[in-house]
Image 1: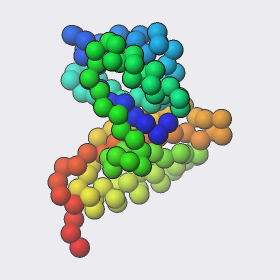
Image 2: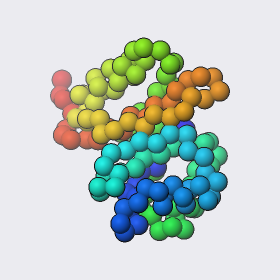
Image 3: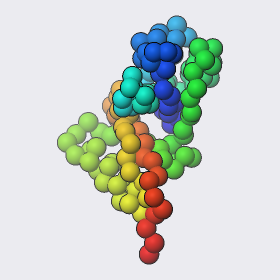
Image 4: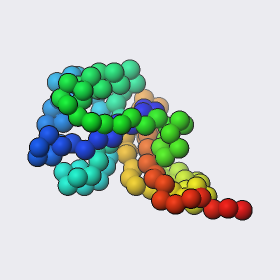
Length: 137
């Protein structure tokens, strides 16, 4: 779940159900979803089971969607945390990201919270966007 796909679910008019139908028909299992204003011009974000990335991209390409793929650890705006299902776990993840964002001129755009894995850990992807140049020491 290190990749995140982001797109505007616009098939004139914007339609999240249609987007999800294309992924379902391609037998793509969603591990997490998020986004904001998804049928008002915003972005829908999702993560798939490892190994299903190519199927998801093929389904989106066949349906004519324009999307971008971000990878945690590669794209500076996407951070992946694996959380225990305990009080304060999300805060601990965000605390580190907030500090890093301050130094790098980013703010959190949205979060994608996934379903727990076999180990019980909950995957959370935090997407931050650059809004200004970072702080200087």
